[in-house]
Amino acid sequence: METRMKPSDTTSVWRRKPMYLYEQDMQKSELKRVLGKWSLTAIGIGAIIGGGIFVLTGTAAHYHAGPALALSFVIAGIGCIFAALCYAEFAAMLPVEGSAYAYAYGTIGELFAWVIGWGLILEYAMGAMTVAVSWSGYFNKLVHLFGIDIPYWLRNDPVSAANFARDNGLAEPGFAVNLPAFLIVWLVTAILVRGIKEAAGANNLIVILKVAAVIFVILVGIFYVNIENWKPFIPEARTITGDNGSPHQAYGWSGVISGASAIFFAYIGFDAVSTQAGEAINPRKDIPFAIVTSLLVCTVLYILVSLVLTGMINYNDIVGDALKAPVAAAFDSVGQNWAVFIITAAATAGLISVMLVMMLGQTRIFLGMAKDGLLPGFFRVIHPVLKTPYKSTVLVGLLVSIVAAFTPISILGDMCSFGTLFAFAMVCLAVLILRRRDPNRERPFKAPVLNIIAPLGIFTNFYLIINLSELAQLLALGWLLVGLAVYFIYGRRNSKLNNL
Image 1 (spheres, rainbow, N blue to C red):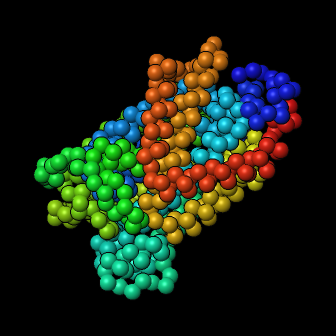
Image 2 (cartoon, helix red, strand yellow):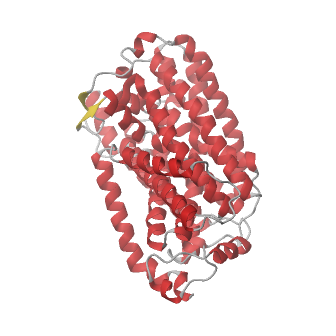
Image 3 (cartoon, rainbow, N blue to C red):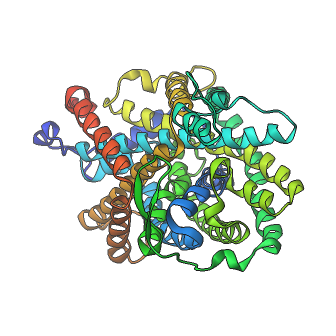
């Protein structure tokens, strides 16, 4: 990256942010640098474990891959490995908040960076909303174990409540809201406003609990696996009715691929690590370590848990409330109620850390874009005492809580996957361009065989995008079009690069 921009560059939508501005951002940062490599790794694991294991394993098995869900995780994991190595190289060179947005801004150009940043906003917001809905499912199951039943119209969005009423012969409610999902988002918002050190400390404790619960699922669940549930491992492709009431093609190899697309958002934990560069003690060294380590650990756990889950309960039987709490439902199906309590309690606590990391990443993306002038100054206001972007954190909490309270989980998950896959593909492209444009730049971490890894990452992620549901693709396309309008109306004319 050049140290100064040419005058002609300052009016182009492809203008690139010079390296000296990144260095100034790092020197002027008001954020506290308190995160070491293991805290960063825990943040990655905290985001990854939960989304895939506790949330979408049920829907991906029932509506997409069947017992071959493990293969879906393998395919998604491969796509992630390509992107993770590219992320690690960029994170070591540009240890600033903003993640893929910041990397693209310095390599390809402002418009490209804006599109990625807008996609990341979709990714993290939808991720937090999806997990909030799933947390509600586990929380409802937990209180049910104590003999407490929340009315169905207070624990479901309007669409899910109507489906529940129809399936149980009840009159459709005039009003429905997922109240637990709404409230848990505000609890997480309060933790994030309080401070990054406190948030990281809470996350570390919850991660230990979650990892222990996942290992428990694997070691205990394996004794209740019925291999008949794996036959056939890849069910014959056929058309089924999805949870939105529309028919779609499922199972077979196409179902394995669509399953990988559906659960891909579960891997965004390592992406969230890169958003914490502004609060890392030694970001050039520790961010790459945390990215790769958290991804490898969680990919192995995902594959093992998916095998145990589909072996304990037939994929055709993962219906109703089991879709929201599939792991607990699997142990319930084999009569191990004592295990159900342990898993439900661990998942209920564990999913909180996933929301925490998703919303944390969301506000740091806003912060990076606002510092560049592409978003209003509201998003970069730091609390003088707590040293957190408290205004944007409260706004994110408001939006996430409202949408989570009124939207079905399947739509949220697919839209999150779109944002994730798009960002990963763009990072692979950006790091390849920079390697060729500026091969002599110092790279504390260098992705191996990049000429192979980056193209494979681009292809894999875009291939998974086209296998998402059509509704998710249309909604995500609409989101991107809105983002382009915001850029040309506000971002381009207020960009700080205009003043260079």
